[in-house]
Length: 284
Ligand code: NDP
Image (spheres, rainbow, N blue to C red):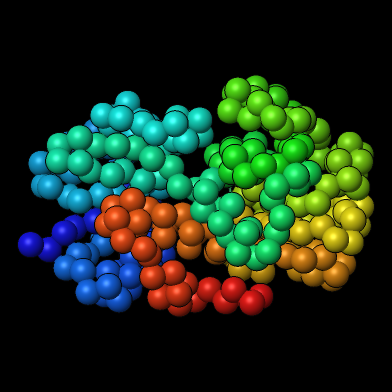
């Protein structure tokens, strides 16, 4: 019988996950299909019940459901618990496990781009869900120091406090997006742009990129923007001009999807097929 997978989101029509997963199923000859499932926030509980009742094999979960879905599941993995967010639901008979592959997906994407994570000194811009995944992913990959830089200092402090117990060997700090950021960047090897400020090509995105003291980064530093619409964000364009190494956000999307695929199917994900379905060029 055809196995059905999907993605819960609202809105969800824009999601690139169906193309990526359907290409992977076809490449491995699996009798499975992956569909977008538009779930209104007030109907999330019923959607999870439908998942059980219909025998849907697994789902990804995207905004705005990543946190709200937690109490509706039977088990939450330590990674998802630490990030307070689920992006993958794995079904074991009637038992639903909530996992999160975002942090590991980012780490894989950076390693694929030959970025050294062990011993890294990183600055993460933003204090939302993507920043939380980035901090957890870097801390789990051997980073030595991580500074969370956000305009909302209280949110940065709360994020660091919540993740501190998961990163006992890491020096965690916070700073604003002001002069303190210049100092933090001057001694960092990796900058992760995890705000939504670069989303969409706009004057505001350009102004945000121009406001960052990227020239303070060491010449050997890497700049990664988690936003992938546009693929070359204003921050990556500026970093390119300064001669810095850059990594786009599509790699994280690809690898979090590949990890979800592997959790569901227990088969190695056909990464190049999935990359092609996303239109990702790993050489850029
Ligand atoms: P959230 O809404 O949870 O957080 C957004 C963060 O951006 C907040 O800290 C917010 O600050 C900050 N921010 C927004 N605008 C500005 C600005 N002009 N200046 C400074 N800070 C700003 O979103 P997520 O963390 O979930 O996602 C962030 C981005 O990451 C998304 O746009 C998405 O495209 C991308 N993403 C990519 C993934 C991938 O697989 N590549 C996975 C997940 C996300 P404040 O609280 O002060 O408003």
